[in-house]
Length: 436
View 1 (cartoon, helix red, strand yellow):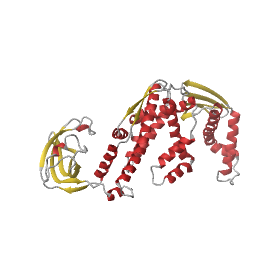
View 2 (cartoon, rainbow, N blue to C red):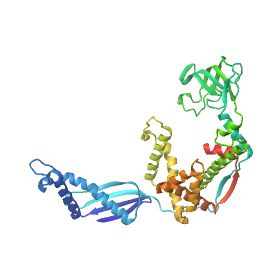
View 3 (cartoon, rainbow, N blue to C red):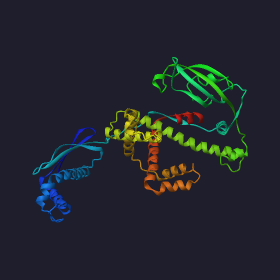
View 4 (cartoon, rainbow, N blue to C red):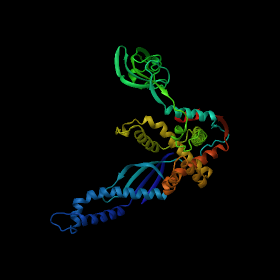
């Protein structure tokens, strides 16, 4: 077998592979004998069909079959011998395969770039810091009380923020009703911002049984194209008005969150521990992302293989369908590539840069860090030992944590020589940024 390796571009590799006709015929004759043993032809006993008959009937099909076999074997051998790792499937062209001639073809594919990334030496990188205060714990308790509040009807009260109203409404644009603009017995908590701007404000002051006409403007970014920026009139009728009744922070309330002692002191301690775990992981991800963003900015021109981007786009499409598709059986291929291209390019480029940085800085997996990460993740569950066993029971599970550990090591190594500024944030702002 003769192999010629060329590089048409920085990320392209092309093999021109030629297999001598003698080797081709050897492969053909072997396949011919194998076929003769298993084919059934009228007038001949099984396994006794003359090779000339088999050649006449199946020769062309056998030659087509060994094309695929020869390509796969020879290409695999060429990749191994030249130590080339392709990205995606190769493009096969210029195939020459005729009886009595050498078999040849060209295989073109992309590879990941070999590069030395620009590191963050002397570059500005922001890192966030945060401390949990007593006020933060108090705020969380207030939110938990709000989640468990009960509703009590107030038939003579006027609606205000925080009240729950049950309403009928119908909307009109230019005097015409529009799709989605009407609902009966719709429950709405005022002040939550679930409706378009101005709608909830228009209900403030209304009482049970009262009707009102309000005018609001749809935002320019509204999802329905025909309503963007349009002025709408809504007829609203309040059917029921309810006030929330917050539970007391008593023993029953505290025990409902799994604090067996039922004391407020233990409750606050438990909440603060949970908040600290969540804050630690959130800050770690935020700060790691800031480092990697800086690495991407410093290497914005790093080439990436289009095949890897295309593959990542498909992955993101399927993830989107799983996350938002529900039971609607959405075809992932129906989603436009443009929605995912930017994110896919970022992921691929970052993966290339991280791999190159690990190699350049000779970073090795830190087993103590891996164990610490597993323990940290397990601590958030009721049965930590079960979570630890999950990660250590299978190599593929542990590899996920090892990848996270390597990312942390890379981030720390990059920060070591960067110009780091620390930004203090409130707990509430950190949590909001996580949801954004």
